[in-house]
Length: 174
Picture 1 (cartoon, one colour):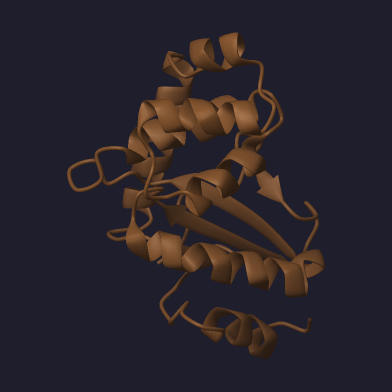
Picture 2 (cartoon, rainbow, N blue to C red):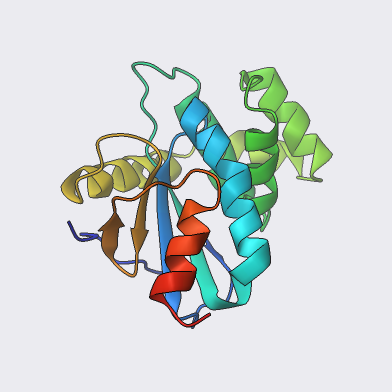
């Protein structure tokens, strides 16, 4: 299946925007599988990051992960202060503590302006962006998290261990 909503200016990019490999992850900040995938993706980006443009899109499975949406809002609000990836990392590194007070602590820890952060957490346009990510994932065939797309095509192989890295190395000249 193909990625129905191409990467665009509303997405936060990690890595060079002109990288030959585009890796999109639909994830849920409270999902234990996404938590396991986080260090794997981080390691992959350290090894071949100059060749990869990474995009994380929110796919909060709120029925089973009630704190995932608030964590996604925290990351998006941090992004408005140019700290999206810092908040993304601290959320995954503290995945067992995603209640509101913890998210505020993380925001302080990464140096956010707190009055602005708190107000931004309530912004309707950020909630709509998360909904947009979710619905674009559904249209693209996402039914579980994490789900990866490589250069616009759904990746159906294993992401565990170094399987995803080995797939990229065997499929693209890195």
